[in-house]
Length: 93
Image (cartoon, rainbow, N blue to C red):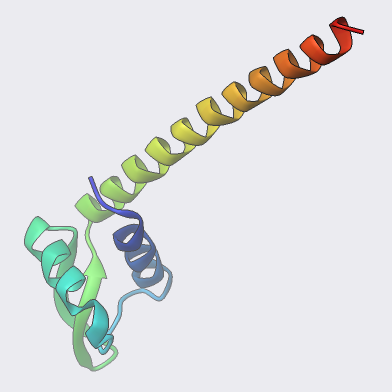
């Protein structure tokens, strides 16, 4: 499973069709994702950079599904809580 920061970094790389990895503050993330097989080092626009592999796209999809599943259940729980509080307030008058 990838983290939110890793997801957004891979999404940015995927949208740009690769990166030249001149982002030195996230260098550890590039190395970690490359070790896991989610990024591949290759020539990008004349420089050595990273592109997202198929495994990386699958990990991104799994992360996205996990986040949506969490958000939907949380939203349903909040709606149920608000509804029950509202019914308690209106029922007691």
